[in-house]
Length: 201
Ligand SMILES: CC(C)(COP(=O)(O)OP(=O)(O)OC[C@H]1O[C@@H](n2cnc3c(N)ncnc32)[C@H](O)[C@@H]1OP(=O)(O)O)[C@@H](O)C(=O)NCCC(=O)NCCS
Image (cartoon, rainbow, N blue to C red; front, side, top):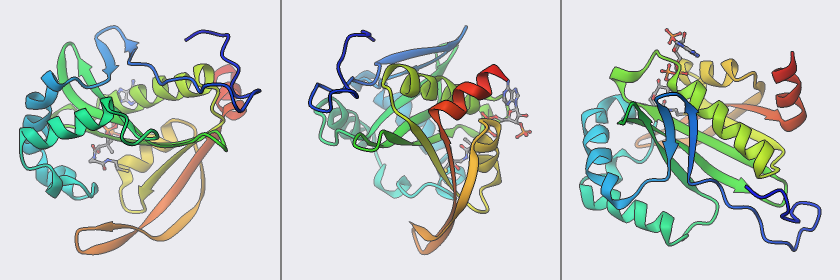
């Protein structure tokens, strides 16, 4: 990422683009999905459908490889400028996804999303992938505030936010509609200076 872009000092300057790929550690990387990833992505979603459906609202919209292709195409066509997702590959195998669910460029904040296959959970993959993506957002994109919103009863997801050193800021009542009911969310956040001082200390 070039150091020379004028944003955020010059709000009219072009905004930096999120990276296409980031190395998390040896054997673990996050990558912008290509159409060629659609089959593998659909297979892992389909295998983990019941597990993911408990907390994620989009499972019924992904019924075929074509649905994944459409989603990947919409990213490359930049239909929604403020949503992007990365596939996570561990030693080449697709194991999950980490996403920038939204970026509020005016306020320099961003929301993270994630999931990992049930068989790859419990290894710290999501914590590490989020940490790398947050570093990129703070250091390269010059964003200021990172947010995770996890259902109050989604303890594994809340543990990710807590492991990342994020602060719980409150509970959002009925924030998300999950198929047939609303769920309350815990709102976690951390700012760039807090993230940096966490690194030092
Ligand atoms: C939420 C979700 C991504 C958490 O997955 P996870 O594997 O528990 O999270 P991490 O990848 O950070 O791994 C943490 C686990 O790895 C362990 N771990 C091992 N090495 C680690 C390391 N180097 N760093 C951090 N954790 C490590 C931790 O102790 C923890 O284990 P525990 O669950 O037994 O306490 C997963 O449960 C999921 O996909 N759920 C369904 C979808 C979902 O809810 N998405 C979020 C919506 S808000």
